[in-house]
Image (tube, rainbow, N blue to C red; front, side, top):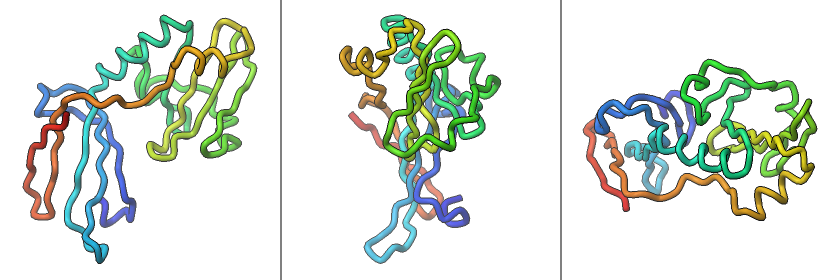
Length: 170
């Protein structure tokens, strides 16, 4: 997949057979030697359930709605599993969202903050229903930052010969 696409990383959502078939987001990156020769693929996975739990906690505490969406507006991650890859958000403004900058927009009844996440090729979309007009201040003041936190998890390393090797990180 990497050789044909010329991409250095691939992100996909699939079931994790090593974790009882749990829906998981896999972050896979090519591994090359010092001369740029392809050696294999390394990656980690985070269960969608784990990520949804984190989103639910922030949504409840700060009266927010948090989504990760693709360029078409299709919801990739949401605290409600039934929305994933079934619901769309307005994507008419996404082409104007610069890299590494938040875009704030007043919507009908809420404020929307959008951030393009180049490493995922997704957009983080946070809707603030308090109508305080200070979504950035509220989020940063309370430390509501979304990061994939490090936890002990099993990762798969696929060598160039096609064989998998389990690695425990933590």
